[in-house]
Every structure is written in C-alpha cells, then in structure tokens.
Image (cartoon, rainbow, N blue to C red):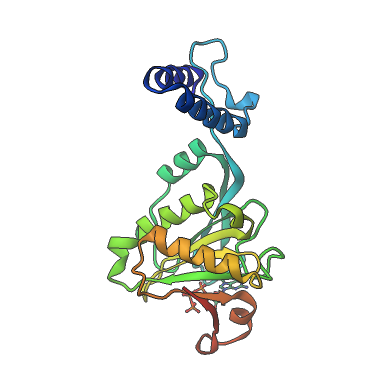
Length: 235
Ligand code: MGP
C-alpha cells in the first residue's frame, strides 16, 4: 500500500468513526504496518509522490512444476519455477502460468516453503503426511482451479494460524484418472493440529461436511502398495 493510500485510509477512519473505534482501527493499522517489512528494493520511484511498497509474505514460497518425462527419474522431473515472498510477486506469478486444469495429464504444481523439496524424502517432509482431496473426472471443470487457488491462499496467507508451523506445502496432481490436491504437513504425530487443519481445509473449499477426506502418512505411502495405504486421520 502506498503512503498516500494509507493516509487516505487514516483520514477516512477519522471522519467516520467514534474516538474508541478510531483508536482500535488505528491500532490494527499500526499492527499491520509493523508486520510489513519495507526494504529498499521494495520501494520504487523514491522521489515521486507515490511510493509503491510490496506486501511481504510471512514465508518465501517456491513453485515447482513436475513434467511427466519417462526418460527421467521422478526427482529429475521436479523443476523449481520461482520463489516469491510478496503478495504482488505471487499474483504476477499466478497470472503468468497456466491454470492447473489446462496442464497436460501427468503434470503437477507444488508450492512449498523455500528450501523444502516437494518429495517424501526431504528431511522436513519425512516425519509428516498429507491431507488428500480426490476429484473425479467430472469435477475438474467446476473445482480444480478454484480449490487449488484456495489452497494457495491458505498457504501464503498462513491461515492455519497457530498451526502454520505444520504446513510445508501443497501439490496438485493433474491426472486423466482423476485429479488430486494435497496439503503436506510436517509432523504426522501432532494429531490436534492435523485434525484442525483438515477441518479448516474442508471448510475453506466448501466440501460437504458429510464427505470425508483422509490424511496419509508419507512413510506408509512410501513403503506400501497403494492398496495397503493406511489413512490415519479423517475429517
Ligand atoms: P503421484 O504422482 O503422487 O500420484 O505418485 P499418481 O500419479 O496419482 O499415482 P498413484 O500411485 O498415487 O495412483 C506416482 C508415483 O510417483 C509414486 O508411486 C512414486 O513412484 C512417485 N512419487 C510420488 N511422490 C509424491 C514421490 C516422492 O515424494 N518421492 C519419490 N521418490 N517418488 C514419488
């Protein structure tokens, strides 16, 4: 937000609200601005009337693309695209890439905290697991892109609140047999936060409360055939 925009907002607050409300709202504004780290590279046109400030995210997030190339290993097919750490850079990235529903079958997007490779083997993923949402083929048009964008907001907006430490990233698998979305959590032994995040996810995506989603533990997925996969938690 530019300083001019902030000033406009503050004077608007002064005109419209009582003294107490004014104090609360200004307090909120100060809190918000305290969380905004302004660096030189975030400021453009320092001498002009408008100072354009990018809004930092709490974490830096890397977008990965998986292209199903049979000549390469699974790991080699994972390619980092870019790391973003401001709201503006996130939108510029989102607006430049293809939506998930338009990707060729066999492709994935993953968004992970910077430094985490989007696989079971990464040391920060190893002890964890993932909430999975399976879509059938007919749900792609209606849900895939919206669900993925909601999940991206959940991640970069740190909407898991006090459980945000659990959130490592998310993946969308575009598959002919039916697409899949997942949120990857760091610690599969932390039951309370897993359940809480699962509930938040269902609520944000507007999934019918009667429909169940399951949480898979990475170590079990790695070691067992899909027919034996256990889901330790459900919401
Ligand atoms: P997938 O791409 O997650 O799902 O896993 P897909 O294509 O729907 O297949 P399904 O088996 O879930 O029905 C496909 C395959 O990719 C897995 O069986 C693994 O061989 C490989 N794979 C997937 N993941 C998430 C990993 C991973 O984290 N590490 C490694 N080494 N291989 C993985």
